[in-house]
Amino acid sequence: MNTYRTLILALLCWLAPVSMALGQQILFDKGVRIGQLTAFPEISNPNNYYYLPDKIEVAKHPDGKPMFSFIRYVRNSAPAAGSAAAVSEASNAGGVLHVLVNLNVSPEVIRESERELQRKFGSARIIGPVIYKSGKIALISSVIGTDGEMTQKVVGIGNAPIMEGQKAAVSVLLTKQGADILWATFQTPTPDLSFAFEMDARGYLSPKNVRIEADFEQIYRNQTIEAAVVSPVLAAEINLAFEQLSNSGAIKVTQIGEDADLNKLKETAYNQLVNLMFDRVGGQSATDLNSVLPGNNRSMLDRATDMLSRARTEAREENNRAEEAAAAERRARSNARRAILDEYRSRGQTAPAWLRDTTGTPTDNVQRVPVPSFAIAASFRLKEVRRTGKYLIDLNKYTEDQRTFPFSENVGNVLKTCPTCFSSVNLDDPLYKQRDIHVRLVDVNNEDFGTYISSVEVLMRKKHENGEITNGNVIISKEAFNTLGNDFPMQYGWKGDNNRDKWLNYEYRTRWVFSGGFSVETEWKPVQFASIDLDPPLSKKTIYVEMDPDMISAENIRAAEIKLYYKNGDKENVKTVNIKASDNILSKSVELVLPRSAEDYQYEITWFVKGKEPFKTARKSSNLGSLYLYSL
Image (cartoon, rainbow, N blue to C red; front, side, top):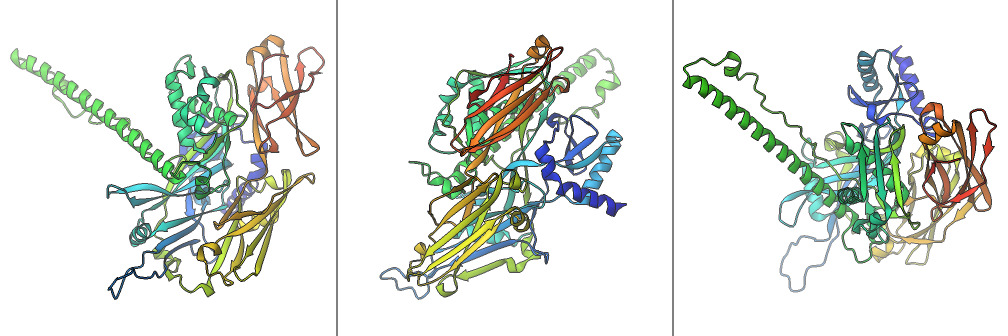
């Protein structure tokens, strides 16, 4: 039976992309903690639960060794003029850390969690994992700050795997000091290196009597939002800007009745505003992003570290305030009790037993805020198309939402399990050098192959100093994507390349072929970094479709079929959204595949009204990220 159950769970995980394509209608606000997992019920069948894959591990080779390498390197350097030292220390040194990680929840953990779920809810069952939409990995370690103290720092950012079993790679170039510190900490059972994941998933919120209104004119005047026109901004920076705008009244929240977690509802509104106003910058490494920050010498890693420090400081200050308030409450309670006891004594009376008994006195009723382990590392750029007027978000229905789930894990005692993963090298023998290049697709999963991507071909060429040219290419198909886990290597060697810095330079170009035969070719692009992160030239743009509940009642509407038309080249494509009044799910989203610089599409609506024949509206044009249907 256990073997059969394991096979069923494995099959469900394999079919997960299909589930993602159909859309997991899970309720974020009904999530439960069961065993080691968090799970969310379906709207249509509350007994079906999807678990959150939040177990991180270093990926392993078939022989069981971790996919991890840490190299300390040194290059010999000439002594300073006039130096009399017989032995000197090379200053040109550092380290390279490369690690592949994946998300993996064992069948044993799933079975244990399902038993706990059934103890709580009887016939409930786990039917599969939550499929993430996208995610980021941040590597957190300690460095010596300007004040000489050790401080936590974001040392690397990469794209996270979105499904269990997929691998993601993060590489970090360390200074000599950083390499020495990290090397020393790996001699301990718990090294000073942690993975921090921020994973985005889609689901729904139960109806709430909350309305949120955003004034675009005021929002665009915010300093952080204005800066996003020319340079990417972090998700954490956007959230901070939205909080400032909420405090100033540019984003207003109207709540009818009580709700235990208004902050989560505000997060829903913020997610929708981000979707309307920003494009994700997904295909650039942290180093690449620095090149598009004119006049800004602060890296994305520095800014992510700042947001991490700020979030931690705010959480600690909030906890200190809560503890001080609790201490003041305990002192007041103790003083009041003492005063009453003194009053009894002054009268020569014996106080009641319950007043003299202190065993039940509460000692700590502080509700502490968890101190975050990392900052939100996803980056965004403001869309060219600007929104105007006011945007109303009505949460009094099942509302589609996107949530960011953070979790982290220490890298563990890798040195104990794989001593050969650590090495120290001298780089002064160029003959044996080879340049390893890794091509990866950003925010693409295997379900995208066949639905809108057919294949991707990447060409590489390296012009060596001796005049020779090394060519390389990879072709990425669905089969290759599944087999190689989104990591496609190319390589060139050392051919008379005496200029070490120039040896790192090469060029690449791409040819994307999409479903229906539409293709896009790029020009040769020079690059120096070993990782090529490719964004598709056509991207999935999310359009939110929402129907007004008051109109449904007033017009006796049974359902609406919304067709959205969009073009890739000369070919017109169509997507359909169906909304039924009886489902009470009056907001849905659909993804259109458009060029990255395009927002335009057309739509038409077929209305189904009680007692009448269905009728269709004329086509209309739009470039907005949401369609609000409030009249026939």
